[in-house]
Image 1 (cartoon, helix red, strand yellow):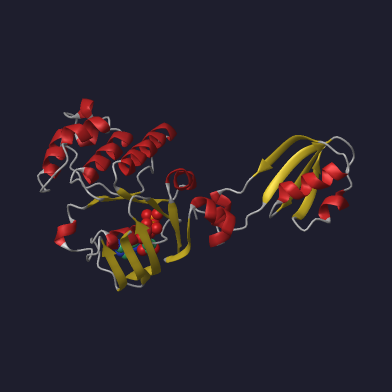
Image 2 (image 1 turned 180 degrees about the horizontal axis):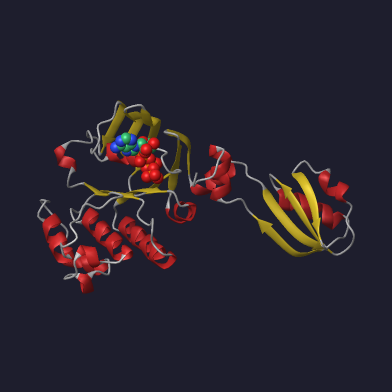
Length: 300
Ligand SMILES: Nc1ncnc2c1ncn2[C@@H]1O[C@H](COP(=O)(O)OP(=O)(O)OP(=O)(O)O)[C@@H](O)[C@H]1O
């Protein structure tokens, strides 16, 4: 069942078209990723879904209702890129304050414990580390016991360990039955966490699929490297439709191609009684898929 439906969304700021034409549906219980380079329109899209901005065109429903329907306030938890908390507010004060906004809030002490903040309750927001601030912002997004959590660029600026911890947290949020919409420009994050992804570029969805499906659909190339046990005539390999290029590096051979490349290459080697030593296959990554889909890298 779709809990969020976005159809032909558009939004501009003056002359800047932030979102040109974005459509997707988020299913209940999934982690849905919105991936794209800086300025692609990701934040604007989720702000419209969260009812924080009014779209210029298109349709959005959240749990079957309009995004600005007041009844959604408790059902949609939002963690946005820039936190609005005052520096002097302590963790405990922030949790209590936000609890008071909701009719049926989660137990904030339990949430603080789950998010590793119980030792920081008296610490002022301004004195928290980046990772602790992120954990607090997740706690605040979850405090109303939402059915949907919208998390925007949650791990930007975190060190690798804090980022991994945050990934575990996001999975635990989903395990509580909350549907998660995750905005990110980190491929590894999208690949590790998301059940499905919309890739947005220049205000449009350029692909919508599982991370694995995106990699396959982009038909990115694979590379196979091995050391042949006997001299190998390149023509045997270049004759294969799967093979695009054969290169030599010292004693090893590097074959680039598409489709069932490994099977094709190893079959030819077997026929010629050549053993492939140190055989390695490099599969395409979501990074490669992204470049194929958008025609440029992610950090541009
Ligand atoms: N309040 C605003 N006023 C004017 N232009 C804006 C505003 N917010 C965003 N934009 C512009 O709209 C475009 C899309 O921005 P948006 O923040 O939605 O993209 P994004 O994909 O979330 O980018 P990032 O990853 O950098 O956060 C950009 O060109 C941005 O400069």
